[in-house]
Length: 312
Ligand code: NAD
Ligand code: UDP
Image 1 (cartoon, rainbow, N blue to C red):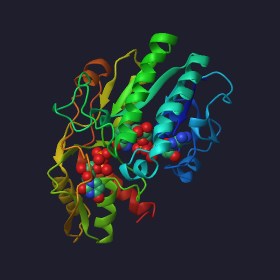
Image 2 (image 1 turned 90 degrees about the vertical axis):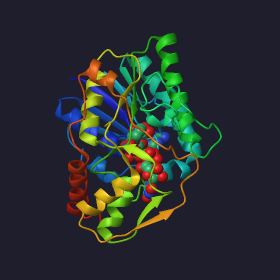
Image 3 (image 1 turned 120 degrees about the horizontal axis):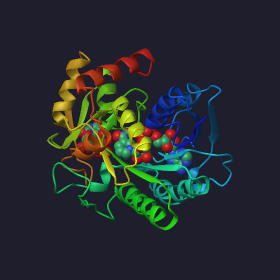
């Protein structure tokens, strides 16, 4: 039986990926320290093909025993309020944590996947962003703990590929949403959905003209699975190119949730990217992948989950 280790398995994307790989017949070892994950995500995975260890990846993975086919490194705070609260831990999991996961892949001969991010493009001067763009990141701004940790993690991944022959993959994930995102994680989709369902004011940062492109989690997971089964060694953008302003997104949330919430404006965070849209030509061409779930459909499923799970 093939076996994968997932760091960040208690998180939003990690738990969906674990669920998918278990359904595909793999055995999964999950590692998470719950800094931004949820115990219920792990409990939902319980079964004969899922083992879990509550550990900090940054402390090393020498203790992992047995053969592995994949090391999938997803551990990292990902929501801006989370990484701004834990900047040092975020830098550590991107650096020491990535080294630990790469060492494990080197030791076991496993395929290694780094969950990188569109944030490595910073506040992009090129639009849409393709993988050859080097980015525009402020190395000393508040977001740098995340952006630079991920840029370092990409550099470490390439160094282990070149110097140690590790079979690596790098995915640059663009804004992804869906069931199991923590209601309180502070990201735009979760904030707006919770505010709309509670009848509270919708908090738009700045004038709402900044753009993002939102990908539903099942589409992302399909892309991740295709990537780890491929031989693609260059970084690959995965995201939904349907770009919208944050104001447009807020209005869709209000409409779909049948809310009477009104929109208010708060200050724009420092270094908040003005626009973001993935160029997914590489994923289309090399993985035969493209997203299928339109934003309104994905949002409906997310809202249904929050209501059914009693999260709001
Ligand atoms: P998440 O916060 O829900 O999940 C991250 C998980 O990693 C959490 O369960 C957390 O407890 C765990 N973790 C963090 N540091 C750890 C450590 N030192 N040791 C062990 N576990 C640790 O976030 P997510 O949205 O599921 O993101 C997963 C990955 O995808 C992250 O690496 C993130 O940077 C990347 N990503 C996500 C998005 C997105 O839109 N969701 C976009 C770009 C990149
Ligand atoms: N945002 C907002 N209101 C909120 C949360 C976020 O207007 O309550 C904005 C945020 O400033 C950014 C966009 O929505 O411009 C997406 O934010 P998110 O935290 O979801 O992801 P990011 O792309 O910034 O990592």
